[in-house]
Length: 124
Image 1: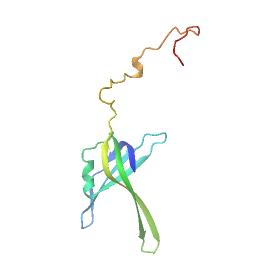
Image 2: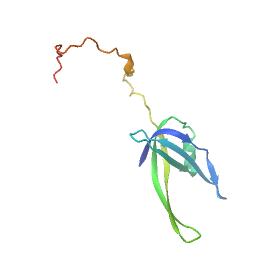
Image 3: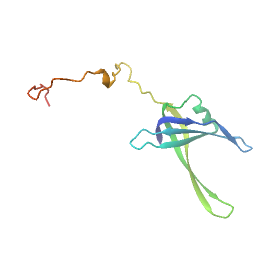
Image 4: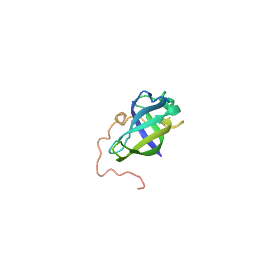
């Protein structure tokens, strides 16, 4: 699975326990009608994949969904989910090579003096 969006936050690497378990979190905001802030964690050697990424960058992250069961001291069973990233790549917002850049919309002068009787020769 993949998550695509703009990086909102890149956390620092955290180390836990005596065995040195490492975790680093990144939050990606999706760009859709209802944007979502998705937290993805990178663990162990995958933490270093985030070193070259910064807030505001467009990225695509390959993820795995993880779930685990835990029984608390009172004997109640709890379930937890996490989203683990295993690859991240920058997305280029630029046009493909060889394509001229598209000028901004305000670079075009609005058409004036249009009349209903003026007919165009477009075939559709």
